[in-house]
Image (cartoon, rainbow over all chains, first blue to last red; front, side):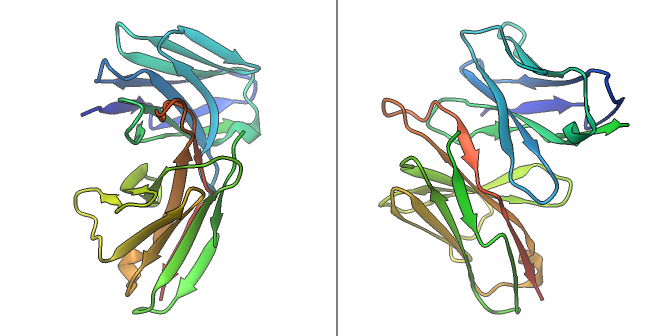
Length: 112
Length: 119
């Protein structure tokens, strides 16, 4: 089945700097890749997603890139702010009719 | 975006009692919902897939008699933790995906989570 690896597990950046989180997946049939932000004590919130027919997608300070050949996708956050501090999860959708497969998460700390 | 509402957000119960958690899709119909359990500082662990009008599909190692799932309507799934024990204390989260053309190839939305503490 699908396996998603996420790195790094923790990331600390200075406010205003960029943060990059990387994920790899194993199933070439996966075609949908969302990213979630989870704040302490809350459920994950979808922040951006990308489908396999697109190589890059951007939404203000957040961007996601996808390399289907290499089977990896990345989350880029620019001009980080303290409120970006949270745990971020990547996920892959193996078929559209099965649950998402999640990475283990990255704890991002933005230091003011 | 779509909204998934989960209730209660926090519950404390005595050992041996049962607790019901509700998950509702507020603005779309969800024929399938998912229940997850999350331990501190860990990722989401899928417990079961809840199917409207039929039996839930449980992941390996999850006791179906312990974690009862009912998906009676297109907008409501419930998880009942039966005869709860302290080791069942955890953060439980539900998720629902919209159907598009018969496939769930769309966004998955999560509830707010339920913090269960068994004393």
